[in-house]
Each structure stands twice: as structure tokens, then as C-alpha cells.
Amino acid sequence: MDRLNVFGNESPNFLKGFQSVAFKPTCQCTPIATQRKSDPQTFSPRIKALGGNPDKIWVQGKYSAFDDDGLRTLRHHVRRHKPGLIVLDPLFNYVPADRNAYSPNEIRAIMGELNEIGESSNAAVLLIRHLTKTKRDKQIYQGAGGIDVIGFARSAIRIEKHPDNPDLRLMVHLKWNLTTQSKSWVYEVVKKDGEDLPIIQWRGQSDISIDDLGSDDSDERPPPRRNAVEFLRAELKDGPMPAKYLLEKAENEGIKKRTLDRAKSELNVIVEQQKRKWVWRLPSDG
Image 1 (cartoon, rainbow, N blue to C red):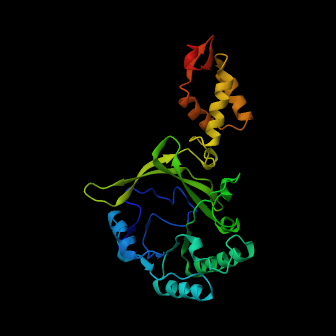
Image 2: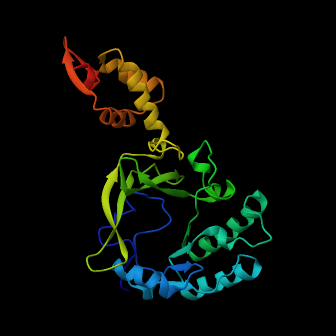
Image 3: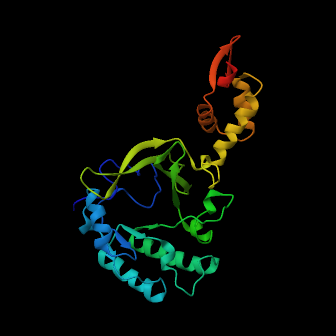
């Protein structure tokens, strides 16, 4: 069977990266994709632009909510096509009109059915959902729907703008039950020469984690980084300070070293040796 590579030829190996992720960028399987838009307008041209084979993807053209009839239909297609991957995009388009996506009992029932379908067919189930417009303190609870959605997931990934380059995107590990936290992956959406459809180009890994990214704010910087910038400005406003002191105090205040390093770069902090000690200072103190 020809390989289906839906993420492009330079996609990272998520079996080494996101070890517990519910999909593989390169898979020898027939994915099932359920969506509301027709295949000719969306899937086929984009998969071809990425170098994939759209014949290896079966798309449910008719929208069907996951009531008893809808779940029965999904089971039928899973038995017929024997997919390695089932994609629901977005998940809440399939919540029946008489169900409440924020009700724990009702969303658990749907998630339980999807879990059973995945386990019985040995297929991974990839659920796509949007972020809420309201702010929540914890990143893991910022997805649409009740918290039981993320509770059922064994692994979760969040897509964010790169804090240092708005043209790049980060694929960040948000939840990991079956493995350790993986590094983030960086990608860019670009157009091939002479073609209108965008493709994904991978730009390697990043040490930026979900803890370094905050909720949307009026300031373009995520809150952890903004806090680190304000910390350095306050500590260095009266002149140079020992690097060891700053690192220890930042750690005590919950600022991670990589976040502090990015704040240091943003402020163009100068590092130099004075009296056999390394110190940091703002450029204006020179």
C-alpha cells in the first residue's frame, strides 16, 4: 500500500516526538475524515499539494450527528474501511442538537462511544476543537466544551503562534498520559511555486512548552514572558546585578530559565564580567 503523508515530505517523526499522539504524520492506513464540507473543495486538492494520495482517505460527505443513528453509521463505515485513523473536525459539529456539550454526563456518553469505537477497531481517534473565547486560568481547560473532553484524551496538542515569529506556528504538547512531555514542533504554512494551495513546511523542534504560552492578552507577549521582562526591568533599573542572584530569584518566583533567556534577549541585556563575577545590565547602563 502506498504511504499517505498528509503533512508533507519533511514532517517530523511523531513516534519519537509525541510518542502518545493519536496520529502519525506518515501512516500505512486508510484514514476516515468526517466533515461538513465536500471533498472536492477541500481534501483532495490539499492532500495532493502535500504530496499525499487522497484515494487513501475516505470522507463522510453527509453530515450526521452522533445520536444513536449517527454512531451506528460511523461504526458501519469503520468496519467497512478498517481505518488506522478517524478524524472528527470539529468535534462539536457532531454533538446532537438536544445534547449539551458542556454537560459532563452527556459529553461523557459521546466520548465513551468514540473510545469504544477506537479500541474495538484498533484505530486512533483524532478530535479537533477550537479554543473558547473566554479566558481560563489553566491552558488545559481552554478548549471548547466541558473538561471531560480533555479528560478522556490520552494525549493533547495545541497549535499556537510562535511568540518570536508571527509567521510560524507551534505544535505544543498539552497533555501526556502515556509518555513524558515532548518538545514542541515548529512549522510554517507556505505556498508552492506556481500553486495556490498552501503546504506545511517543518522548521524543527523548539524548547517552548505549554507553560511558556499564556492566554490571549492585550499585550502580544504571552504572560510568562511578559512577567520575565518586567522582572528584569525591575531588577536592573538601578544598575548591573549578579547573574547568579538573578537566576536564583527568578527561579524562586516561578520564572523558567528559558523564559528568562528570551526576556533577556528582548531587552538586549548585556552580560559581562565585573570583579570576577558575571553580571547582567541594561544597555542604557553602559
